[in-house]
Image (cartoon, rainbow, N blue to C red):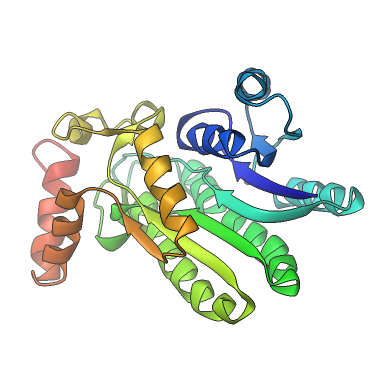
Length: 258
């Protein structure tokens, strides 16, 4: 049986993806750190489509050993993950010298290492089957330096470059990889990242809008999706302007009196 595996599936963008694939009659494997929200999400998805199979795993994806247990359990059940959506991730706005370094390191584990491991674990099987879609959630932050949010921007740059690279390698095996680069959208991200200063300046999209755009782009086999014309224009400008200027503007958008 084929399944769609989604990390960060209990809320936000991951949950919006889960609803789309449930409507499309796709069996789901949902991974999230919050057991209560994961249970509620599962119940809601069953009201959307009661016929699909839904498996859930409570996991902190920064724990690679736990991810290995999940992959082994899926293999033992003889299930085929034909679609993988790496949606789990978080950010934190903080001065470099004041940051909680343990939290920053965990951010790299969640945003980068977990994504890398799952892409390799399931991408290998997709290549053997010559069938698969991967959606990796990066950000427009991955294109520009981010003073006061440096780790987050760096992790999203990692996701962007990794995804673009493996998309090239896996295309000969008929496996499609989409790098999703949204701008701000409504989710718990702002609260967790302590970055309401930046988000007050921007009208965010709904997570359901972002997920739908990515869902359609993945179906078409696109490699990269930057959501919103303003975001596309911003990224285009960063390719022309001096990096020093881009860094300064980024800093002033991140923190008052930067």
